[in-house]
Length: 411
Image (cartoon, rainbow, N blue to C red; front, side, top):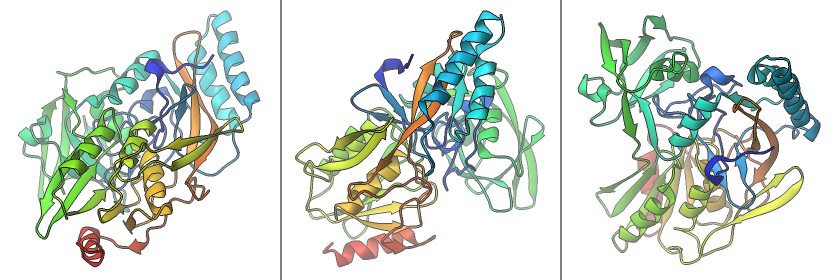
């Protein structure tokens, strides 16, 4: 039986914090190495950028489906889903754990992006889609040498109150060294997923800043995300940054566009965005498009389409900023703006996760997800395993390059 809590389908950036990521994932704002994870770390991936978030996802309209952009590979046959359901039912009848049986069946299925959530993990995962999570307020990424570096600290969070800053190196969590570990596992430790640690419990971080090495004990808190931020730059440029497509973020983007001064160009910053609710990404697309196709996708071979709403601002100069941490629903949005000639895309190649997954409720209340299809951009490009190539390659100076492009577009 398929199950979509609260009628949502999601686009998990990586799988349950397989990193995005939602992620987790992560992308250059918390970029994790993609890998399949089991129940324990599943929820640790909400934003693919938030060291305190949980699974980045994306929701599709129409039939209740859950999506998660991924890599180009064959869709898992219906038989694999039946095998998982059968294994869970047989385990239940034998007095064994349906979730554990499902995990074994998932491992045999060859589905790289499949995952099994406990009932509590799935509940928390759903809450994360509303922009709430338990953690300390850190965003981080894994460097090439395996080090975990803090990339952002949420204002007013436990981490900010402790004086932790972007650029600090995270060396350990509760005595466990994190160098070389996937960001998803680091997220799980910070959140206390394995032990079910709630808000109010403490976590001790080992940190390094230059030659200074120290530890900080923080108290986990229930935090809400601020997925959309807006700032004005000199020269009539407005930067709208979308960290993740959580509930309401699409309308926030539309509101930000409406409030942007007349004549100002816009930089839509999607760097490190591990994805989220697909419906929110489509709503965001509607801020810049006047109807039309945003993406197509298939579920078990059945083709479907996503369309933008009418009345978007189609004249204002627009640049989309992306990087290796841009994935899932964020790639869907980027592909639509690029294919339809609405934005110049600047940055580096995106992650490349465009597979669709469907959740199934197991006898003990846990949830298994298996890949059922893939999505494509308006021109028919597959994103899975390929990502989106920017129109203009740029690294650390990507924002400056974006401003230069806007000036050439008339602003």
